[in-house]
Image (tube, rainbow, N blue to C red; front, side, top):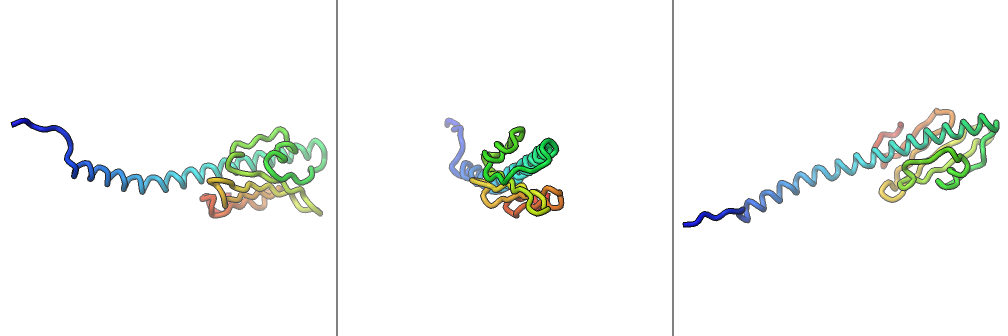
Length: 137
């Protein structure tokens, strides 16, 4: 008699079931982590944009007009460069009648539905539920 080496079909199926269970647990957890980390990076981009807005105000004693879209915002504040422009569109809304400016990051692609807002007077920093980071940041 010769001894045979290898795995039986049942052993292979058990391994595949275990891998499937682990993947079904790990994949949603990873996706939530990726969403949350992208949103936090976009929040940091908004904070650095606020610094650029304030820097421009200090130099010119005025705020520029509205800028919609990442490229227009980068044009208005040349020293600012977002790290998450591939996942977010950034907008700047100028102050009107004594109000404060508003900065907003709108998610696109994998981040669709995630909207982050920052008010210039720092009274509100909000996020939608799709950002997976709570309603305020």
